[in-house]
Image 1 (cartoon, rainbow, N blue to C red):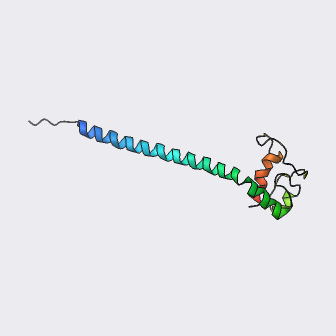
Image 2 (cartoon, rainbow, N blue to C red):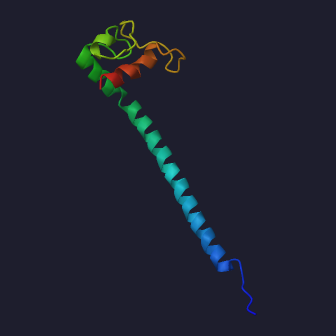
Image 3 (cartoon, rainbow, N blue to C red):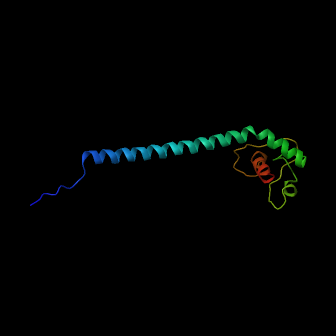
Length: 112
């Protein structure tokens, strides 16, 4: 009668653990790259804020976020309007979406 041995050898288990470790390391590195790209994108947006303001001013003769005629400037869109006093007022983190500091990004996005 022959004895059959069941189970895995130590080498097989070591190989599986190495493969799992490599996969896990790749996933974690990929997540780190994604997060880094998101941060770089946000930094780029803030660096380009001046370009956005000047481009909007050249196109519509008004400051984005402070534009009282934004609905007509970005046709077909329901954009919030500003006070047209030349100052982007309000807290950018305001809970109300009608603060000029929040509306700034909406105007820039809708105006391309």
